[in-house]
Image (cartoon, rainbow, N blue to C red; front, side, top):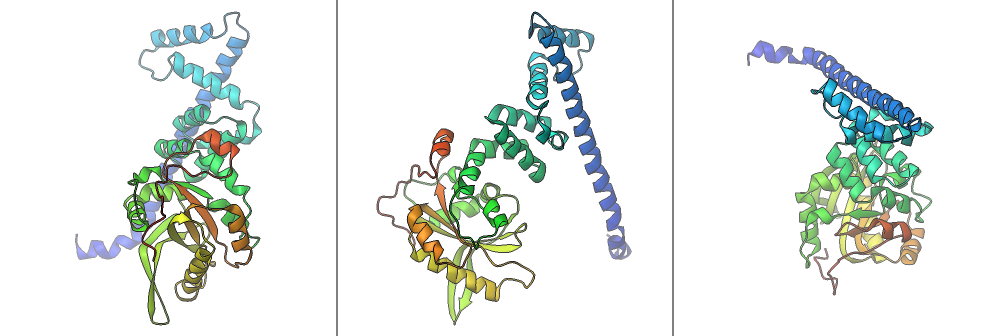
Length: 337
């Protein structure tokens, strides 16, 4: 690359921005047209079925007609047409979806229709997809891990009044880490290593606003070195998020440890324009009464979180505030640091 070209590259950055913006708008426009077409097809078929003695037989005839008249067109077989009809009938009287329906891909619409059990759950995943621009794989991951149920249960937990509302909605109370594939006997060091080896999925569990900073992040206080298990930054909250991993149950003294880290981060690492740090404890389990008591005397917006090693049963999550699954730790041994 010539020196002259290198020197002039900066002035053409706006060109790339123009091109990228146009491509993004074009893709959104194409998706919007497709979704609108599926909506109109579903509306048309719904009307035909409602006025037909044979009901769904109309869909069979419509699929056969399309296959004969235009054999090159894909996605308009009986199954596809039935889904379009279901799509229309599910949302035709739902005002919530009006601004969202064309912002989500057809594949994700189908995942939500098949995976969500209520209008509220469908609304939740639609809003999440529109905000986070989830791929099919990412949305499948969230639905399969009962993200909606865990979020709703977390929002009902008692947390300190000092925790801002946006923090409460951004950090879940229960995280599902079954993708780590940990052995039955593991230490905190094993857990930390497994997490850092699977950062993409781990960050997805927290949300896309989390950015990984470091493992065993060193802070120095009074000439001594201390190490935070994992340190993240949350862009939406504009704050550092230290995470401490405990393979045993929650203990009140854990609050003191993470408060110490929060103070050190806020004094020596946090930038002036950033918000105070938020600490997260990932424990094998907790007694909610003990947690409430410990946090009531804490000025730090710390959320104590459970981690589980296997996907939780959705019905169990709907009926209980928390669960522990398959934690093969009889003595609670680990690398306490």
